[in-house]
Length: 447
Image (cartoon, rainbow, N blue to C red; front, side, top):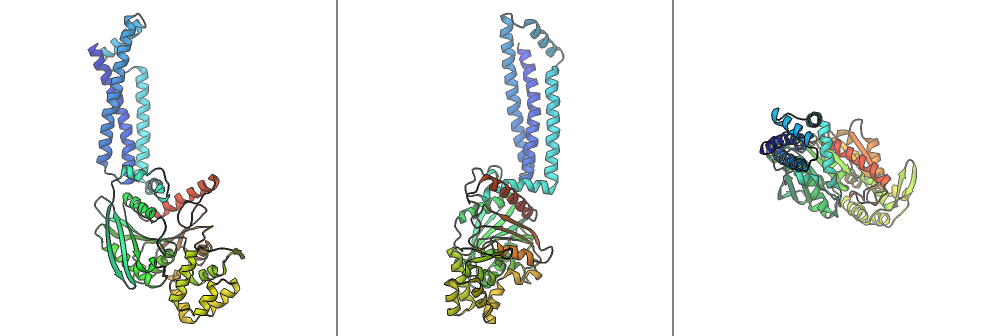
């Protein structure tokens, strides 16, 4: 019996090794996708091999002893003796059933290996998997965090920099592995953005994928001031990120939320930055500060030529109030606009602004720099956004020269820039699909 035990254990180990090879291929593919070292996948595969092989062998021994007990009471004795004798005499030969299992296992291994090679070798496929792993980090209540399970924690540091209107407090997350990496500067918008902890979690997830991610907060934007000084804050942030030894300066992009989206576009078009910023992803932002002013103060937007009622959030009204003061608008004009007026009257007031007031508003308007923009432009907007109307992004798409806007995606699941609007599944699933492909397009610039 001891010899038979050894034979079956050895056979179990062989099948276990085959199963382990399949597991190892899957793990190696996942490791290659998210940037793990090959050695990690190999180590896991080796551990799986021992565990699976041991389990199969132990199970086989149990079956052997059970068969022996059955033989002792006269059940299936002739069949078992022939099977056991054949196994001993042929030295680890497999039964037809075992050979079938081996063939199937071999086919599975080849299929997994081919899939792993495709995913690891074809850039869009690899990035598609990475985009899928990143998606949960965009949702406040996501039940899973796959990147945290398979990648090392990023390295965090903080720094403060000066710019023309104050200071910039920056939190940066870098990948744990050495080498040069792409980088994203994530700009959160005017004021203290609610759920900024979600932005931090997203930055950490990007760093786990191999993207250095900085979150700068300038004193001006925290105070809700939409001025050209904030373009300088973005300039300083780009320069500081470029200096980092782990950053590849040729692969640096801006992701601007809310008002920071428009400012990011303006910054990327500046002569000293237009060849330094690879792309801008503007989410829930504006095209023209003057047209936004009309939308907010008249509580209306124009959709496909028809005027539609639109009620702005109070924070947007506060930002517009500060913008009017910073631009030098008269107290009388500011008071009439902020009290609420018709769209026609709001348009008349802004058209009669002094030239210096209009110049200051145009200086922070993406519409004024689209012709000189070299960066690839990605736009996102929710069609029910109460902070900045989605018509602003539509206008930007229409005004941009051919080839500037790479992708524009509209949604219905976001509360401004946070995806927590309660919607039915028939709305959520198509929007999730659109979000996946938008994220995939941006990640292609970075990974």
